[in-house]
Image (cartoon, rainbow, N blue to C red; front, side, top):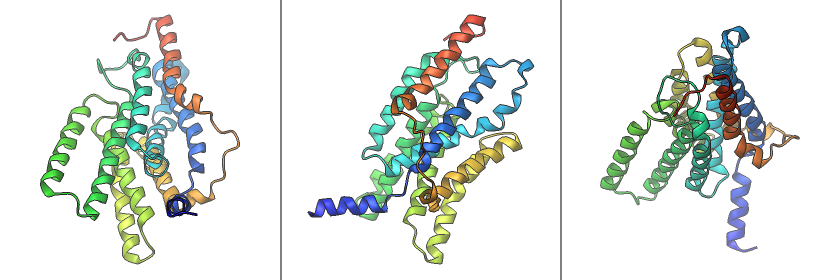
Length: 269
């Protein structure tokens, strides 16, 4: 066995289990679909107003957590992964734009996830380059300014806004620190502190107490996976097909848009 093969095998052994994401995919798609049906299709007579502030608050932090996890552990090129997410967003944008909302134009959640992953990957790269003393102060300052300007501008146009764009970078910061931490009290304290920002952000993303609680609990559940619980989660028996995972987001919006157009309730881009 050559050195490259040995290094790859060691990396595989250190990589945390991702079995939980198989369960997370089903939960995220089901809760997202329920949320969108309640928000865009249901009338007051349906009595589904509670969905938006309860199960509907699971989907986004769960999607963001899975994207952050895959960006850290399961892809060789996070930027290519982000571009694939953005392609799904482009396909879904037209039916998404037909959903009734206050904003005249808004980019769907795929753009929030893709841009968040790009920012999270940049943070990871900054940490690695700094550790190797390969990042000058001037370059770091310019990169940081560019990222902040991009975050400020994009936050006005994407779903979940400025806060949503920060969720994946803070997830990656926390999960990465948890994975890299050792067993000394100081290292554990650093890992604990690194999880505080993403939990605070999750609590600030909603207005009602129920929505805040569910978003924080979902975020905490993802972080618990990073602590080591992921090893205890069995593989899912009914694994979602890749085609279904990629197509569901634009397809379910297309179905909702068709129904809204039929009943005369669709918005117009």
